[in-house]
Image 1 (cartoon, chains in turn green, yellow):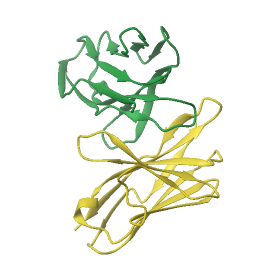
Image 2: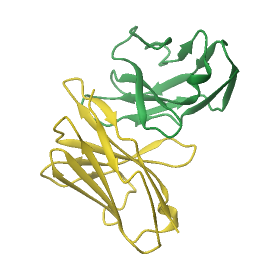
Image 3: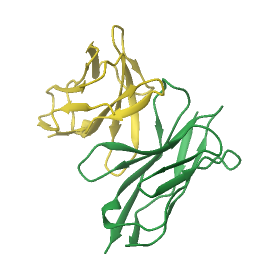
Length: 112
Length: 115
């Protein structure tokens, strides 16, 4: 079945450091890919998405590019802030009305 | 975007009792809602798909008699954990697919602790 593998955390970075969180997927067909963020005590929020190969999703300084050849959707940010501390989930969706398949999540802590 | 609420946000119950968790789509009519379970420091695992007007579809390994789902209306789905045990303690999250893209909006979650 479909699956998502993302790098295990926790990841601890200093403010203004560069962030990469790796995510690879296994799926039949052409899934849509997502990054969700869960801030402490809050529900999941969509951070960005890409629906086809070579699409780049971006939001709040975060970016991820849908790479079909490497089945990857790595999350990057050039300069993290303390407020970016959260758990980040990579996810895929096979078709429009199917549920999301999540990776295990990566906890990011940014220290001042 | 759509607003999804859950009630209660947290609940503590004794073993053997039942607990009902509500998921409401506040500004969108939802024929489908998804229920997930999240263990501490782990990912979200899909439990079931709630369908308005028909039976829920459960994932393999999820006991349908233990986790009762009722999609009462186009804005409300409920998850009842029956005869709760400590191992049912978890974070339960619902989501609603919205719009032509079926983008999912998540509720804030309900933390259940069974003592």
